[in-house]
Length: 251
Image 1 (tube, rainbow, N blue to C red):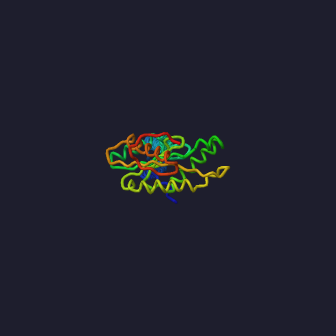
Image 2: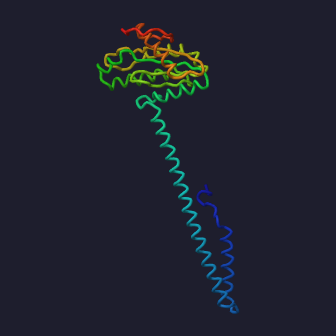
Image 3: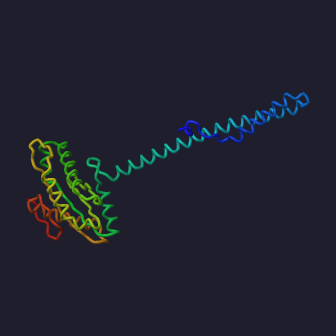
């Protein structure tokens, strides 16, 4: 605490030299045999040295303030950069990854290994907006994300890729649990109280794809989306794993 209140003097040795010179000067002034010119020169030297010390200390203080302000500015710039990056990669309503960010995550993971991609869509979501308005629709979307967060493992990534459509990326070893995660998410949503005026049950349909290393987002999403259509055709509120089937009308 004392070191903060009383910082070390950077010019301690100069201060000692100045004190010694001042003592010599005072002694010279008291001597009747000392020449006036010597006293004057020594006095001028002391005055100049004192001014130099004062100016140097002032410059050091100014430098310290400038360094502190620069550090604060750098910290603020870092915070702003983090905020901009977050806004560029996250959905503002739910806080999960947005479409472009989840695409980057999927493609990046494919360069390292295989993955599973779960695509889900809220069943009959338009009816919620039409019946209760978009604020209630937003409430449902946030509730679905809460359900996903409760079952997706830490290594997974949740993304919102459309109005009521979401993805879950399960990389590496987590991919083998894709079926269990999708089923757990389906159950969590079906059992969740979304607080709607008519207390209706909200459900979601799921499509799941799993691909080895070297794939791409379009491959994984295309297969999972195809499986999602299969879930819709099968009556909704179910999980379907990818297989290449023709699209049929959704009832």
